[in-house]
Length: 230
Image 1 (cartoon, rainbow, N blue to C red):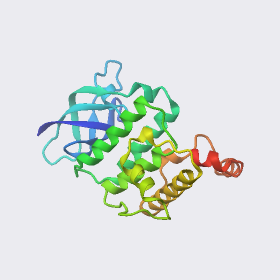
Image 2: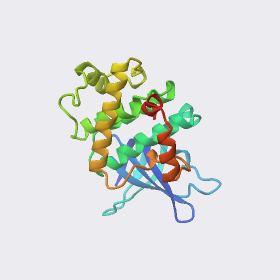
Image 3: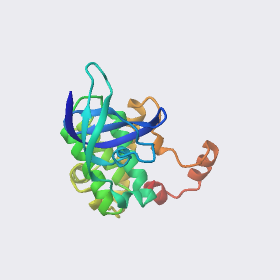
């Protein structure tokens, strides 16, 4: 079977001598795993299509009965260059991709989840992320995955709750004490959900090169305002 679908690379790893295996979230097929043959060779032609959070139209061949498709070609739509030039944006993009990968079953398409991820990457490309970006994305993904909450919790105001679920990510720049408290509560909702439904912690939440002892010391020296920005 041969098909073409638009997708975003969530994760990739080297396979054998010159190939790569990548997990993609596609518009019409949901989350699928694909092999990119020969991309690690010097003249590999599909390397850009296999990079994390690359968005492209992929031509895929699937042998009968096989669970792993092979990419035979494609047309690149965006690699989000501004995201790749900023460590903060790149980390948030990888965090969104890991959430999609960890909270979505294979081969169950959901156009809403695809559009959510594409919106997040597009806004990261054109605007600096705010402290509300990650919790807002998580709350919206929870809603798309069937784990969303119908009404605000922890005494969060209905208008704040609505904005976290509906407004553009780049517009969620809160400064008042009440809004910052509500944002902290939203972070707590996300933390409880992820602790309950994930078997092991998200890799993108692990600080670079920090041991548990160093992380504990750094956290104890962080002010409340700085903690909200993490």
